[in-house]
Amino acid sequence: MVETRRFGSDISEGIKRPFTAALGIGGAGRNILTSMTDEPDFANMKFFEVGVNERLPQLPFMHIDKLDMDQTFRSNIPMGRRPMNKTEDKIIRRVTGNDIVYIVAGLGGETGSWTAYTCAQVGKMMGAFTIALIALPFETESTERQEMAEKAKTKISDFADVTGVFHNSRLLRMSPHIPMTRAFEVMNSIIQLPMKEFNTVITHKDIVHLKRFCSGVDEFRIGAGYGKGRERGKKAALEAFRSPWLDDSGEYETVLTVVTSGTGSGEMEAQDALDKIHEWAPRANIMWGLRKDPTIGERTRVTLLAGL
Image 1 (spheres, rainbow, N blue to C red):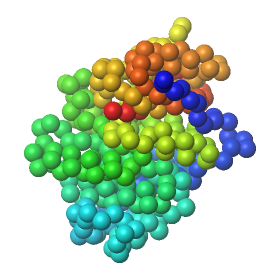
Image 2: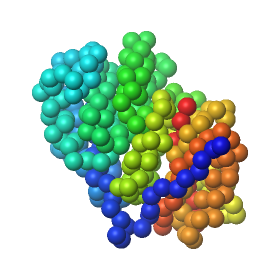
Image 3: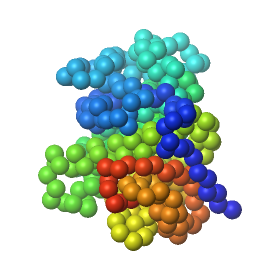
Image 4: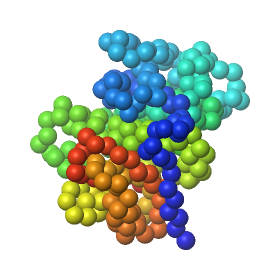
């Protein structure tokens, strides 16, 4: 029997929000996080750029050593069962005390792939709810980058509680003539969505339930959509299902979703959205949250992570 369970609260007063760290790895991760730092939705989140060479000093920089990351990536012994190298120790010291750790990275290059995997291990070892949001290379990129990305994705999913995967090429399939710079802007805004939605809903007491709920899922895909007018919750869910990163197969068995309402209570919109999600993925267990965002006006947004 499928389970539908609500989590979180969009009421800030008296609610204990988790301490949260976001690690933007390499240029891709850094670009995604940079535009988020001044938004009030992320007041409880600490941002870090993690990489080899510091760029503009917009984020606190965490320097990593490539040889250390290579050592971690190749080791068959998890952290905590062997001596730490200097870079692992540095990342642990910066992450300690956080209840949620986001890892944002593009995979394919050695540094990004190695470091994202290292950070996933760190989050797991510290007991944080670890969410990796990773982009895979375009199909036109080299075989070596494709293979490195797939290997890193598999290793990351062994440690992250949530591994959200974005295939870059799928965006271009939907809009084949979109300029590359615009494609990356769209990708960045989509990857930010689960961070924004979950960060303003999840409470400290939700974490243990979310970790248990997500256990055993190797890969999550993201969908997001807006609805307006009558039955706007259903419309938003239907648009989310058409996201290029989702497959319309009905095979999803785990769904995390947040319904965001601009005006009104949002309860009716949330129920409409949940009804459509049950139709779309009839075997899926669902955990859902509800939040308010006046900036979207008379619309409803549905953001979901669907687990394979």
